[in-house]
Image (cartoon, rainbow, N blue to C red; front, top):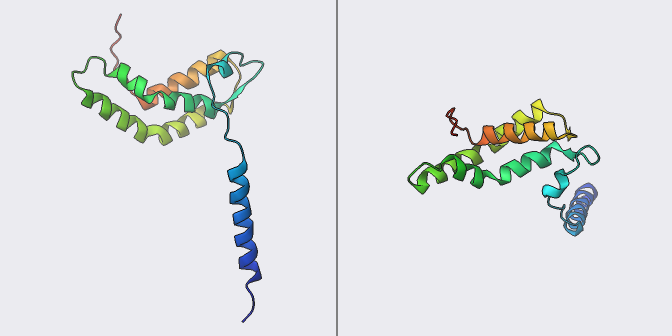
Length: 125
């Protein structure tokens, strides 16, 4: 029986990759300061979408402010979390990869938020 050189090589390469990946630093969290000067320092569209997705709880709290129970908010959060991948795809299809202006940042943010938590058409003063 021959020694499985190819299999051993692939396993060693996979283990090497896993070890290398574990030693890499975690990517820095994106904060509000990263969006301050978009013309000089554009950000990825995915960072803007991730920021909106991270605020699902706040969006649902605002959307269900008139509801009497917390069940409405919990249902809103569950529904919004189930929509994240489809909303992400929709935004990725409509907007450029790099966000270079405040207007594009606003449009990406609002589009993502409206997709995640659909608001009724009633405007309150």
